[in-house]
Length: 414
Image 1 (cartoon, rainbow, N blue to C red):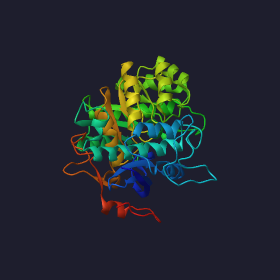
Image 2 (cartoon, rainbow, N blue to C red):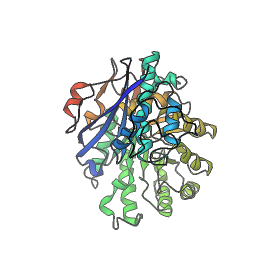
Image 3 (cartoon, helix red, strand yellow):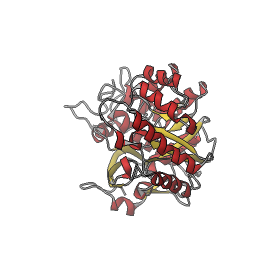
Image 4 (cartoon, one colour):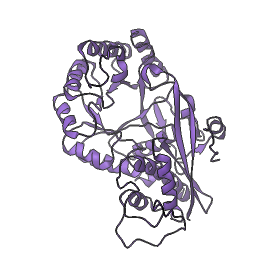
């Protein structure tokens, strides 16, 4: 079986959550399809970030003519390259100007593993595993070593209510989540009291803003009680002293974690926060495995939090999970994806012993949970994502939803 084509389509539609004050807006997602000469195909998802579409064009030239079963060698070569002598090209597809295509295997097209290349490769790797699972009649979690669980704990990112100064709105947002069957919730610190931000540049939290953040989250904790896990995300915004101060203010709420308290490039700053924080520190959503290793080795985090769409795919999640487990650290999974990506992440979660929970952002943007479907299974049930033994990811595109949300000048993959 040989790969014959890599195609993608851009879906877009309304987004009514995961924004400041639940403000409405638009969001888009890229669906990837890898086709073969056997008629089998695999589906993946990538975010429509700057440069991802261009990276997919490069990767298609590289993939055509390859056997899809060599998933890890393919991904490794696309990201890190290999030493010469390189194998003969498997297709005639080659762009002389950009050196794109199967002739060049010395490095990624940007000479770095991070950024648009790994974001595109992540979606491609998901599609390859879906394809291999269909070809072998096995679910993806078996390709990753087998499952520890057949349903995966979900936590909801709720950002903040529209009326951030209304405590009843905070209580309602929390209870609405519980009424949907979920029992783990996260809110975004930067969206909790933006009405008190005095300077949008200096990465600080003033005392009046600190008190408003505490007051609003206290209202949530009082409403949900102690049977519900609550966490917060700092979105990499704050200076270390402010993050430490925030952690001490919020300690009585017994939060599951304080996420990305400082900008993510410097593990030493994060280690400084962790050493003084009474709340566990969670990091990892935009990092590749080698970067996460730096944070673990420097004792800079308590919870590891990679994203399947940014880390390099499902096998890279497994590498992170295993390294974290050797250090007795839990694996939570960030997810900026829609239904396809969150199902893919759930397969990695099922195969990781130290898995804690998996994020979902878009509860109120229903189309993002509906453009793929699984026979006989809802996306979520009782706050969990159930898995089946269907081959691959066990998903198919929903033609009606995809057609309704197809971006301008795009073609359906169906």
